Length: 377
Image (cartoon, rainbow, N blue to C red; front, side):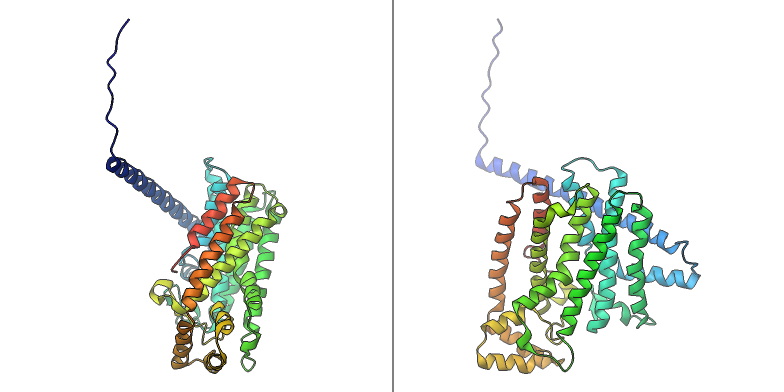
């Protein structure tokens, strides 16, 4: 019988454990950052492929001038944002596959669907900037304000819109969920443009009436104008790719729409209190007489004198009047009201997510929530 000496290793002290934990966390963070960088790089590669296909679409005989115009228009409007909506399709699909390695074909198709959403976003924004007479978008002049563009931007918006079914037809025509994809994009586009219509008709010149503004109207506008295409659409695309039936995920849709409402409330807040250098645009909700969450909350909280000040100054394209409204918002502590709203909404959404039976779907929704919670742009 052999006797082995048993060495008793010293118990690591608390400081050593803390250092090791920090190193592990740092390595995980670097790995995650590298992975996200790889995904973004692949996503941008797919943009180049799709752009090339569209610029050589056999359904139209391009001249050199027309091809150069469309290419410049695409590069200016489609890939310039944060790309969160598009990248969310890939993130969501990966989470739904629960760690399984994606094939090159799956990655490409998820990217293509993500770009369809970015194309939809570009189409909305090009036309939205014209309707709002906006100055900047994503830190640069709006497309219609570019030299030689002007109202040609209206047709450019229609071209962006028409590119989406071209992409879907080329890459998804043989997929069993192709018709479901077409229905999904058609429905979400209808909901979004209808939300935009509600937003626009509440700000008609000569018919501006703050008494019409309420949380109910605000929710209706943001639910249709923002929530469906920004939050539900990316997840719905991923679910269809994963072979799921969307009718089985109504509760998931409801949670995502609520998340999209929260996202728009953040946007309303940042339009007034955010740094234009950070958010990439100069906020114009006050002078545009928008049914913003801030003005609705102000109407709820102000006394008669403050309400009179709001009625006299809201919706006027005059910087001095805009500043009076912003000062009133500060007096009413709308920044504090927003902080409390954000905390309560986050907790409510998290509780709703954790009641879902699928851990994979929970992971998808938690990923969305973590990206927008306390965002600054």
